[in-house]
Amino acid sequence: MQEVDFAEIHPSPIETIALHDSNSTIRVVDLPDKIKDEIWSALSPREKEKGKFRRYFLYKLDLPPLRLVIEKAPHHTSEIESMRVKGHGASRAVRIPHILDVDLGYILGAIRDGGIHKDKKAKAFKVHFAQKDRSYLEREIVPRLEGLFGPELKPKIEQRTDGVHQIQFASKPIYLFFSEVCQMKEIQQYWETPHLMITAPKTIKKAYIRGFHDAEGSSDHLYHSWYLENGCEPLQFISDVLNREFHIRATAPMRMKTSGDYDRFPAYQVFINDYDHFKKEILAR
Image 1 (tube, rainbow, N blue to C red):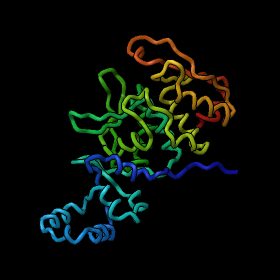
Image 2: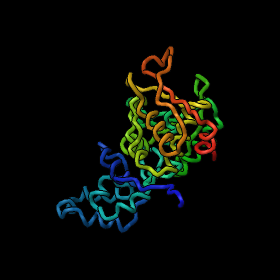
Image 3: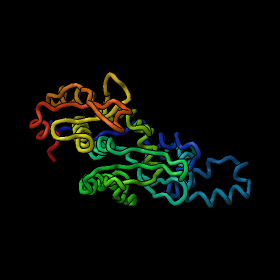
C-alpha cells in the first residue's frame, strides 16, 4: 500500500489569513476579471453611485484587499488559494500553501531554529531561519521556501555578527501563515506541535522530524528549550511518533543542564536509542 504524502489544509489558509489581517493590508495580486466583475456587481447601488468611491474602487481593484475578495466573491475561494498575495507597500507577492506536503512538513520542523517577529518600529512582519552551516540553508531551506511560497520570494542568506548564517525576509502573509495557520508564537519556547502535524500522514511526520533534527539535533538526540518545568510537548510528540509509528526507540524528554542565555527556559533532549534505524528510516533522502 502506497503511503500518502500530502493532505489538504483545513480550514482554508487564505481565509484564515484574511480573518487575522486586522487592517486589511493583505492584497490579492493577480485577480481574474470575472472575479473583479463579481465583486463590483455585489456592491450596493448606493456604493456604486458614489463617484469618488467608484474611482477609488476601480483604481484599487487591480490589487483588492483579500478580505473584500472573500466577502464579495465567496464562490471563488478555491481559485484565490492559488493566487499571489502581498502585504502593504513594496513587500513581495507570494503564494500561500493550501496543501500540507513533505516540503512544508520539513519547513515546520526546520523553523525551530528560526522564528517569526513583528518589528513594530519598521512596521514589518519578519520570518527567519538560522544555521551555522550556510550550505544547509542553501541546500535545504531556500529551495523549499521558493517552492512553497513562490520564486518571487528570493530569500537571501546573510551572516550575522555572531557568525551564524541567516535567512530573513519580511512578508505579512507568510508571517500570518506561520502564526495563525501553524499556531506559532513570537517566542519560540511557546510553540506547540502544529495542529496540522498531529493528524498528518506518516510521510509528512517523517519530514517534520527530519527538519526538526536538522535544525535542533546532533547525532543521536534532539533538543529544545520549553517554557514548562515538567515536560516538553514538541519533543514528546516526536518521541511518541518515533516509538509508535516508526518503531524507533526514543526516550521521553529529559532535562538538560544549561548555562548563560539558555537559563531563561528549561532545556530538554530526546535520545534516539535505535539511531541506525533512525538514520535509515527518517534521515535518508
